[in-house]
Length: 117
Image 1 (cartoon, one colour):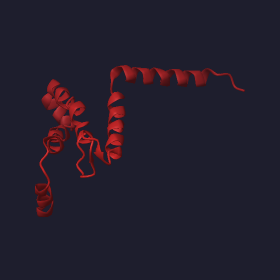
Image 2 (cartoon, one colour):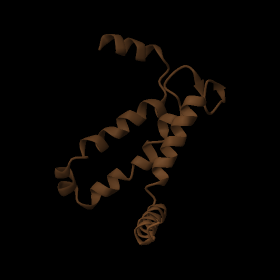
Image 3 (cartoon, helix red, strand yellow):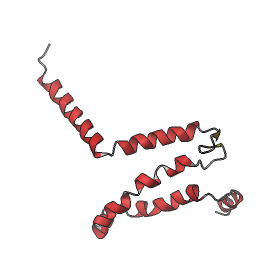
């Protein structure tokens, strides 16, 4: 632990980079079913923070390789991570989920009703 602490102290503290992990802690702790019951409607409100917290690590890379905001260094890996997170968050939008579900239903129905060759 001391080794990690000294490395972390040597770097400049960045509020976005360091705060995103602390902000995700309540989401991890309250992910269990018992917390859904205890928090009720507030559980959903709390877990909507994932839309704010998830992109934060992609904005400021934790390594010294680059910085997206300054377009310095190796920013390819953070951009790939940002693209993956964007796709996963977009898949959670209700309109996109309905579209995918309707395509799956149509695809399955068309395959079953096709006459045998």
